[in-house]
Structure formats: C-alpha cells, structure tokens
Length: 537
Image 1 (cartoon, one colour):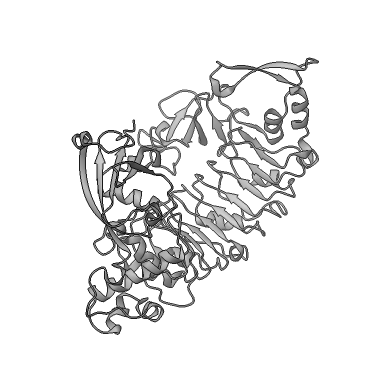
Image 2 (cartoon, helix red, strand yellow; image 1 turned 90 degrees about the horizontal axis):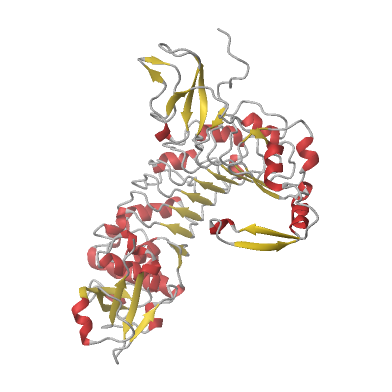
C-alpha cells in the first residue's frame, strides 16, 4: 500500500501535547486493526507498553525494554521546527508600541507579582540582533531541521556556545548541517536527544573549532562517540553520562582521541577497571576522568608500563563498589600524577581495615594527592596522615620490610621521609598519639540554645566517643559524627545538622566553618560536642 506524504519517516522525532517525546520506529497498518499506526519508542520508558511486539508479531525494536507503543497519526503531534525558527521564537519578540512603560508579571511569582518596566523595547531590540549572539540555548525548543544553506551563517555567525539539548533532532546529518554554518562554535550540548548512529561521512568541516561536546542521556555508545569525534579535530572535553554504558568497546581510533583531556562517564554501568583503562589508552592527554555512580568493584594490578592513565590528575570514583584498601595502592600505580580524587560512598570506607581513618590512609597511599573528596589536603594533614599510617603498619604487619612492602608499597618511602617507627613501644596509634584526641559527642532531641543546663539532660538521645586527628577539617568531622550517631543520609545536609562545643562555663559555641581544623576551634582531648539534627520533611 502507499503511505500518505504527510506521515513521518522512520527515525523522525515527535512530541505530544502531553510533553512526551519519542522516535518513530514504524509507520503502517497493524494486524487486526484498520487504518495506519505509528510505532514509537519513547524517551521516557514509562510511557511505553511493549517492545514493538503485538499479538506475537514484531513491528519494530526498542533499545530500552518496554518503551514502545502504537499511536494514531494526529495533527496534534509536533514534528519540530527549523533552527532559525526556534532561534527567532526564543530571542526575538515584536515591539509593543511607542509606550516606554509596560506592566510585566514575574514568572517565579505564579502570576501574583506585577511590576512596571521601562524601555523593554530597547532590550528586545538588542536581543533581536542575532548576529551578536555568542551563547545560545535552545534546550527543549523542538528543533528538528536546519535551514536553507547560508541562512544560519548570515544571521548568527559568531555563536561560540550552543545548547540543543532535548530537541527533536534525529540524526547527525542535521546537526552537521547546523554547525557547519557556525564556524566559531566551540561548545555544543546535545543532551537528552536520540540521534541515529553517525554516518561514515559528514559534510565538510562541520565541527572545525569544537572543543567540548555534551552527549549526556543520549544512549550514545563509545563506538558511536569515537566515530563522530573523528570529525572534531579540536575536541578536548566530552560528556557521556547517563548513557547506560556497560563497556567501552569497538572504538574508532583517531588522532582526536589523543587530544582529549576530560571525559565524563557519570552514572553509567561501567564495571571493569582494566577494560576501561585499556579502552582509554589512545587518550594519551587525558587529565580528568569522571566515573562517579558506576559499578567499579576492584582496581586491578597494573601489568604493563607505562600506564594508559599516567597523565591523569583528576579522578572521580564516588558511589562505586570499591571495598579493599589495596585498591588505593593500585590506583596510585595506574595514576602516578593523581592530584584530585573523589571516593565518597564506596564500601571501602566501611571495611574493617579502613573504617577508623579512611581519609588518612588514602592520603598516605597516594603521595601527589592534593584534594580528597572536595577537601584540600594541607601539608600538616599530609604529615599527620603519613605518621598515622606508619604506626598502623608497624603495629598490624610485624616482620621484615619485604613483608610490609608487599601489602603497603609506601612503607619504605614514608620511613625514609619520617623515620622508622619505634616498634618496641608503638601502639595502634603510635607516633600520632600527640595528635589524636578523644571527644564525647552527644545528640539532643531539641535545639539546646546557647547555654548548657541540667534540664537538657532529659533531651539526650545518644552519646558516642570518637578518636580523631586534631588536624581533621570540621566538615569531615561533621560527617563522621552523623555516621557515628547512626543518622541517615538525608541528614548529611549541612543546614540540617547543628554542632556546638561545650565550653568550660557551659556556654555552647556554635561550630560552622567546615574548612577549619578541629584544633583551630579549640577542640581538644576530652572535649564535649553537642549535636542537634533538625527534622527534614
């Protein structure tokens, strides 16, 4: 049968009045029904009903399970607009006449606040000068096609940053049609789109100066990214978060990969450290790698040198599944220039060998580290941490240096730097005894006010003792207190947790600056800390 000319093509992107967006995967009749149907894979899987199968017959396939359904063609379905139409709708507004004053409603007030504005037409006139635009956001503006050749270049030639996230763009050819007329474009965001895999050839020089690309939430594979990256000779930064990536395989190797400095794989499903590292071997200039909220369980030993991650300076492994202290030693082997590291929310902080002072041990194990979990490492904190680590190893690993080096590679280096611990007298806290302090933490059910009174004893919920370094930053101490008191993650909001130091005259001094060390606040051995955790709805 012949399909009507007004029907969409396979691969077209559509938007419904309800706000749901999807990709047309099928156009035609469905057995047992009359008329034509559109088979759609929805961006929001909850809108779907099946995988493209009806009554046992497959009509189309879905990348995400149960994200497909059939709908009837309808005039209410939007197939998008041109780039210039969206630009005009967003940045150009007709003048309101000769009056210099207008009454406008503040959008954040839900219609309750009206203000009088002066000379808005002059402002509109400035915004209407599209040729002066350098930064353009058309996020959610339903762009689906380019414009007549030469039109974009003549109207807005100096755009440097362009956001085309959550549009109705369906393929890279259309993207290239737009960007080829933006010769100064440096940054491009295509988040939350569904672009068909890039072709082998694109129009000449579509991304000549592009240095940053954002493809978060697009379900772009590593293979597809490396293919399109080959058309971006100046690319330095790429974001591929929320793409369901389980591996980095089948890469198209090009000279572009060797220039990339920043890669963001936040919130994917990557799990094998060795596979990740090997896949990134062509990225010889890589300095920043984001692997937060993935599934990395182990840092494998480095088997061949040099490491493919030898230039890495910033690494985020927060919210993964690392659980062993040996992973930190191996991490330094892979990343010998690592300066900034995020490790929060990994099981290793709850493991028996790291639970007491995980931060101190990580600092001692990675010599070049300057920032850990968003908190700077001072020279004093590094020295204290290394001394603590030396005493810990001396106590827990008796025997020869050869035995200690096997599980603690930094042992000899730290002994050379600080001197060997006196193993005949060392206890668990060893040479750090003068820096470790014992404090008593008390949690109250109600806000205690500014002065400790006997009546407050009735509101005591619990008390715990903590042994901490006097050089610990207060922000880290706050988190340690919340964890020790058994408060849930919802209470880790700084504004919900109030902390005071009980002074000798029973006044309560509020502790607020997270960047100061405990010693700066006057917290010493035997200090009493009062905590009130406000209820959060």
